[in-house]
Length: 368
Image (tube, rainbow, N blue to C red):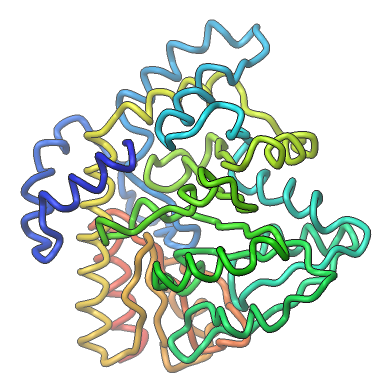
């Protein structure tokens, strides 16, 4: 879905009322069948996956692409579709085998030979760990008391050795969203000192209609890289396709370090996913419905949590995370891993409503 269309859709449904969102998308459920919930099978709510995908149209596109399995893949058409969606030319786009590959390519590009990177802590670690393996030094800056990126503290860490500033927004694992004006000011004030990387894997779940993607700064020629993925809202985590958006000269540097390219089935899936607006809207609505159900249970247990702009919820269980993971696993529910130093906080993904109900019942039993 084009960003401008998404904004208009969010405004039209008025997200002040969840029921309105769901009723407007109820018709989209007709051809959407989530993976069945099987008795005895663990409920997996630990990897922030979308249980409703791939959509029926995407599955058909992948099936039809099997006959091309003998051919080497070409990203040309997909790259142009992505460029049209983001409002840039095709030379701004780097298609990767999952967004993690884009993160790793960036970590290699800017972290090799002792490059310094600044990032929040905790946040998504794929780029940071890969960069450290290539000899980079990562400055990890603690979140503020609202569990948001502490932009001022991150700015204070910038030196002449800083090559990249990593921002995950909305953040994983906290689900927090930065103030849009503060974020733009931060990027504009520092992009001449270091490249700013904006990981927007969960951008599609943001419910503020006018919240900007940092692609806007890429269009202005700034030293900004944006990462996006087909894993979340499109439900293609197992297919592995993502992309980077950057100024053409930066995009070429990144492309030179990409090792995992996509395949013909992934390309067919991604192309169709970009056209399947009905599934996009359905995914957003069902995610919001699941979050509301989780919030209700956490409220009933009087547990602190962060209102999330993602497809997961971060909450304070009041007990050590590893203990909770074990207790929930005994109830056949798998939740997210620990995120030190927040040793009592846990992350729960939004699954189907049936899966979320299983989580809610198990949590009440474990913590009662």
